[in-house]
Length: 305
Length: 305
Image (cartoon, rainbow over all chains, first blue to last red; front, top):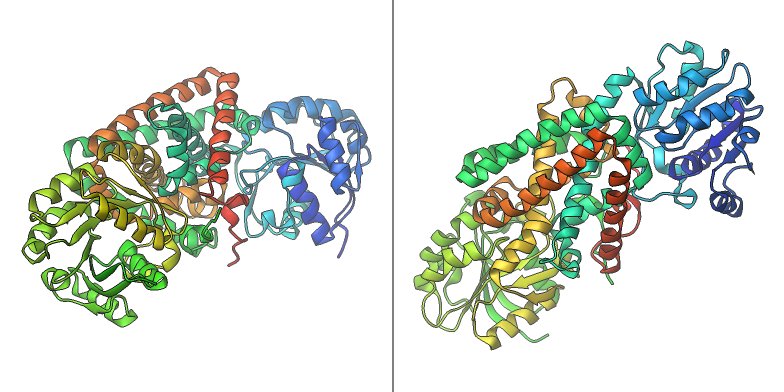
């Protein structure tokens, strides 16, 4: 395979960065991959499991001479990290990120990007409820979507980064940052907040003991707990940085929820039945688009103790 | 294996009834199993796939001479069905059900149960997003819980029904009907309503096109669509019949959601981070209790088109 980028630097070594590393190695499209994480424990784990060809003790060392720099840190520290590395960025290098919000990342990063460096914001729509350097795997991006919000970046470099993500297994699309943030508020941010809330409510109910909530979770609740087990720091930063879109979708959500609540209170079975019938169609669309499995319960095998 | 019930009648032939049939055959603990469904199409499918030893064209025929009668119909028709079969129930027979709400089922069924028939309400906490006679499978109840709300029924018959459910693969617990309805409002009914709502909101948003919602669903939303693809009639009846507990838990849910919404609006990252950290523990409990898998994304394999 042709080497697309001779030197790649991963800043932050969590689920996404470690999956990117293994996917880059699988695709065999890059030269040396360096890595940096703020926590020395994370760097030790990375060295232990062979994550990155070279783990550096500073972000500046990791990015020195890199052709592609990928920011894989929580959104809240993107500005600081970019400031820290900006003096070391090579002219002509491509700087990208994997943050779940794009307008806020652009506002945080762009002021610190030196002339001659191509900043192309990105967001792979992939993840699991696990986090940390050990949680990555090469298949994470296969058939998932990666969204780029190029924001006027050089077309040749954008095209090359698209191909890079395709080599990692992704489909790629481009859109405006604000539109991205609204779409993600619907498909990701609001669902996560709701899942966190539902799990928090269950945790609060002293009349319903822990054991009951846990044992009887198979009736629907357990799906929520998977989402609500996601990384707290990442998600705090998502909500703080996609405030407007999340609050807008939350407003629509509570409006609809109140309408259903009133239907329950008034015994309006027709309203409920119509609503529940309509939502089945979206599931079919997702399965037809290859974005989920059609086997019952996601194909979970019966779980035995 | 010893035959526990010589004749078993399944009234309603959907996901639960069909899974019970295959689980009974696997366990080899019953004699002849008869079945009835109101829809002649469903009865035809049942005959075609060998679901039930004998499919009857009336509920009365199906229950005649049965030692165990299992009502597997939506909660809204439990009263009518019981009235229809009550004259045919054999003295000493056990009548049970699989409804997701227990107080309303007791109120609907009990007035029509003849003297000498043992009514033991039940609820297997198991299911998938699929429905109908073809959706059943023998493993559905393995290591799941079945809750009985015996309501003063004969202890020997309750013990026997417990053993029957254990033979089908379940764990069994007993509780008061009102407590059952509250626990299920937390672990099942409210989560389902919320999932339906979130999917409905996405469906409503004309600015976010169908294709985007569908393609970009892997970021969290797709888990909600699975739950929101469940049977509309069953779920309409659940909400109409567990009104008080569902409305109470919904009230707590919106209270917590508004607190998180305010934290987002005010930029209170500490509140968000604390909340998101707390909810991770419940997930661990569910995995330790053997009620879900610990592999990422429920062990979904990468889905390829």
